[in-house]
Structures are given as C-alpha cells and as structure tokens.
Amino acid sequence: MPVYYMTCTGFLKSSHTVIFPRFFHIALCLISFSCSGVLYASPEINIVGLNSEQEGNVRAYLSLSKEPCDAPQWQIKHLFQESPTQVQQALRALGYYQPKIEKSLVWSEGCWQVSLDIDKGDPVLISVLDIQISGEGGEQDFFATLLQKNSIKLDDIVHHGKYEQLKKDLEALAEAKGYFDHYFESKRLAVDRNTHKAEIHLHLQTGRRYYISRIDIEKNRLETSFTGKFLKVNAGQAYDRSAVVLSHKLLDSAGYFKNIQLKYAQEEAEDYYAPLPLNVNQPVAFL
Image (cartoon, rainbow, N blue to C red; front, side, top):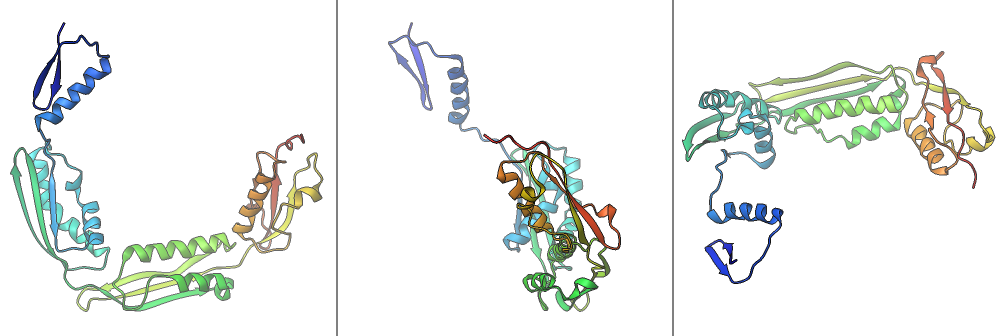
C-alpha cells in the first residue's frame, strides 16, 4: 500500500510500504503541532526602571508571576491591585523605601499582560554600623576574620538580605566554635524614611566556650591507641566542629570502621566540659 509522509508543507506519497512503530506515530503528532505554527499564549509582566537584581526580586514577590493565561479575570485583577504593595516590599528589602509605580493591565489574544513602570526613588544608606562581639569570644581571631569579610559597609545601600545573612553567620560561627550559649544583646535595623538613613546594631554575646573533657572510644577489636590515631581532637581542647568533622572523615576513609558516630555530648557538660563519645560498629575485617 502507498505510504504518505507528513512534512511541514503537506504530504508526500511513497511507492514503498513502510510499517512505523507506535512511538513514531506519536512523534509525528508532536511534529504536526510544530508545523502548524500554533503558539500557546503566555502571560507577560513587563518591568522597566530596575536593574537585574531589583527586577528579579520584584518578580519573586509578585503573586501574578505564578498565574497562567486561563486564570479567572477577577483573580488577575485582584492580584494586579495588590502588585504595588508587593513591589514596595521587594524594593524595601534592597534599600528602596519610596518607589513610585505606574501600572497597566490588558487582555490580548486570550491572555493578560501587565506593565510596571517603576521609579525606585532614593536609596536608604547605612549611617551607623555598630557590630560588637562580647564575652569570651570577643577577642578570638575567627570572629575578627568574619567581620573583615563582611560585605556590609558604612554608607552602603541597606540590604536586608545581607543583614540577615550576617546575623546567621555570626550565630553559626559561635555554634561551630563551642559558644553554645550565645545570644544577641541587640539586633536592630532601624530605617528613617525621611532622611533616607539606616542604623544597624548587632551585639553578640558569645558566653563561655565549651571544652572536651574526655574522648570515650567504644571498645572494639582494634586498640584504642590505633583508633585514636585518626582523631584530630584531644581531651582538654576547646570544642571546634571543624576538627570533629575532620576526625569523622578520617575515620570513615580509613576503611577499618563502619557506622561511625562522633558527636559532642553537650547535655552532659559540667562546668563547660563535656565528653566526646566515639561509637562504631564492629570494625571491617582485614583482608
């Protein structure tokens, strides 16, 4: 029987009989849609007046960004009315507190389009940058190094994301270095919209540092002295998570142990000293 081949311009007749597998027919169906020139409409949100970071943050805040063409008109109109508030929230996070926004909404070819013309206004600048580390950790070099690398500078445009990240970094470092009782005596970002100035106050109280009272190595077929060769921590040392993690990696890569558990027992601390238990299953047999 003759076979007709489908192309983007029509069908070609063949004098040969060809049997196509089922998946090939599916592929031809997909090709037919491409050849037809039919394009599915998609929503458009056009934003002018912002740089790429600002535009990306605005789009992340806009509820409209998640809506398809076939969303109910009442819903699109409702979210459209809310869009200026969401734009303000997005720009406030990047230091622009008084934007001016012109907006429009139209339906065209079965879908909706939104245009946002944004004048972000004057930025809020950091006039006071007050970061303090007190307590036993106040003189430690690792806190000083963190603050030197801190990207927040005096007279910079205030950036809420950087402020939140600095708080997290300070707390994470305190935790990693054994200052488990740390807390912020002050954590405040204050903005004066009239003067376009901001003050940042972060006062971290580290509290006392915790130490390793002893290393409890579970008895197994290998000598304790042999197991201890893979540990980069000693009794009497200040707790340092990086040293504990390194010890765990060395034990794991040695090939003698399995199901390794090496975790500081802070809940057993007495006068800021707590044990560091090492538990493993039976060691892997020597070959």
